[in-house]
Length: 258
Image (cartoon, rainbow, N blue to C red; front, side, top):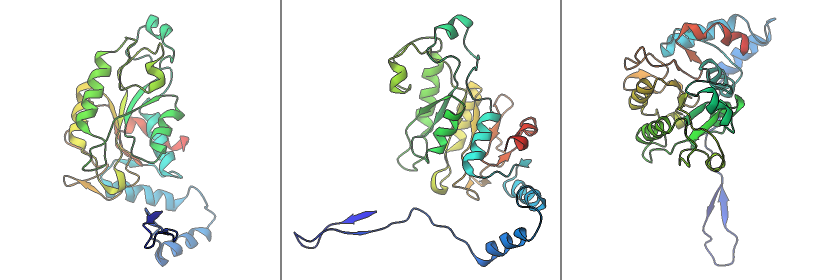
């Protein structure tokens, strides 16, 4: 809601609504839904199979998994990337014993997004590390991401007042660990600057989980979001799109989890 200044000193201010987004539904979408309602399939069925195949082909992914919402898709990607509690990577048993939050993954993400981006990390009892955005794009700043990952990796195993940690953990006995993943968001259809993010991921062997819920059809340097990126090397952990999965070893458990 936007409040405009009053034209007179004593009259109340006028207001008008500036919608962030609204549905764009035509008779084609309504007819497609009506066709499904006239079949025995109200959940998984041939239309889902067709949608997954066409979506994967559209973005250039090997596989696509249809889910009930963008939040559900992102949550499955977080699980598939191994983010969660009880992650022993990078910590010795003694360090885990000293930690106030034992074995919880750290995931770098943006503060400028729908709350689901951070919630999907919290669902798995991992810890979102909020890194500020580039003011030109509104997307996560790759320079700050590189700084955060370098600092957290350098301070691994220490209990220190690291500025990248949430305030409550700075004042606890939390043992710092290297991040597990980077979760960039393509906000409002504007692609995040993926190449430098992938460079950081490859250098530190991190998973990259793209939240492309708001940017299906958008392109980054001539490639649709979710399409294979030539900068992804063998040391880079799986790069997962919001609904598209390119690495087949994550495929078996994902459909049954939806």
